Image (cartoon, rainbow, N blue to C red; front, side, top):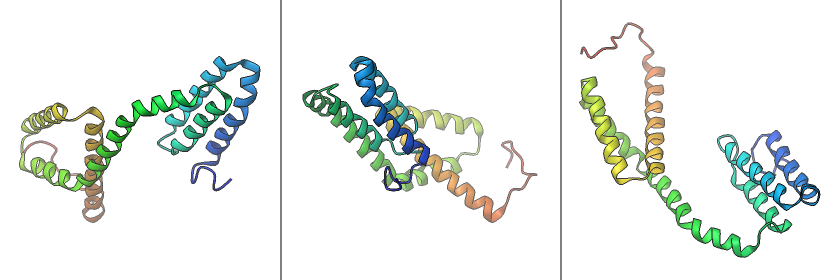
Length: 176
């Protein structure tokens, strides 16, 4: 049981096994239509748990079970993979690209942030950067950029707080 689905929590492993086991009697008792909806909700559950558990293995097991139960055929699976593959590749390469450009993005944004002394100008610069990003990138890539920058800024913040500490008397306005 330790090797099944890797380091995911035990309750998640048991839920996936229970779903796979109970889908077979559900197919024969409730019929293919109801079982298809049950499997769809199980797949959505695996995606909803993506922050804690890797959803590809249980999703793949559910897809194989759908084929084994005869709820679809291999021609429909091939057709869906054929149409979805460009989107999957786009996501993979965009996220990988953002990951490798994270340091450069951090240095660029850091220079912009440290160069601006006014909150009004900071807000204006943020709106301009977001407008430029949204004009040339899709929403998923923008989200990946924001996540990469946020995690990098948090790491810098954490390093500063652990070395310097928090000083409660610092001003919070634009006076420098």
